[in-house]
Amino acid sequence: MRPEKQYLVEEVSTHLAKSDYVYLANYERITVDEIAELRASLAEHDAEFHVVKNTIFNVAAQAKELPDVSEHLTGPTAIIIGGNNPSGVAKALGKFFKAKEKVEVKVGILDNKTLDAAQIEALAKLPGLESLRAQLLGLLTQPGTGLVRVLNAVPQGVVNVLQAKVREENG
Image 1: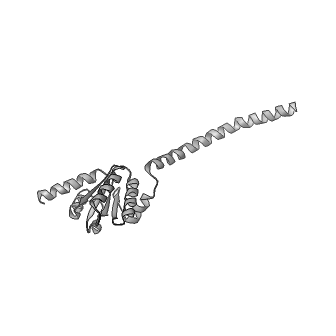
Image 2 (image 1 turned 180 degrees about the horizontal axis):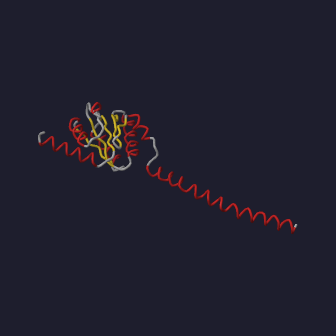
Image 3 (image 1 turned 135 degrees about the vertical axis):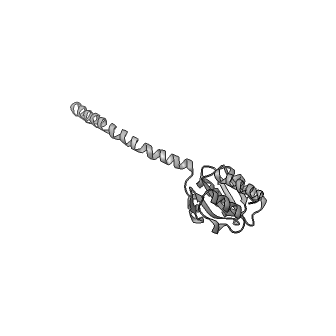
């Protein structure tokens, strides 16, 4: 392989190493200003947008032993990687692509599993990472709260019986 191509493969490999996921998008008919807008919205999630050559991506993906997505490597391709919130990035992509109606997500790879466009859309509909953490915390505190209520019910019951007895004797 020529040194220039080897350099490009190493650069794409470096990008792929930054993330547990990668989304491939067709960026045909998108303007430079729109790409800048997309990059800004992805930066909020610490994600990056890079235009890559299909053959270079394929070589880098095979070297990293990612699932084979070569059937999706047609036309202009961009990769979206980075950040630790794949659902937030998918949400940002979906929102942008729906607004522009020019770009589409081809395929994604999350934890070495291939995701089609419908699965990426479903991932985008999941609540954000912070929301999921809050829901999990709520679930974890429920049993403790229930236990405290049960333990409190026994003495409260005794107090209620004693108060009723006092009222009966005084009344």
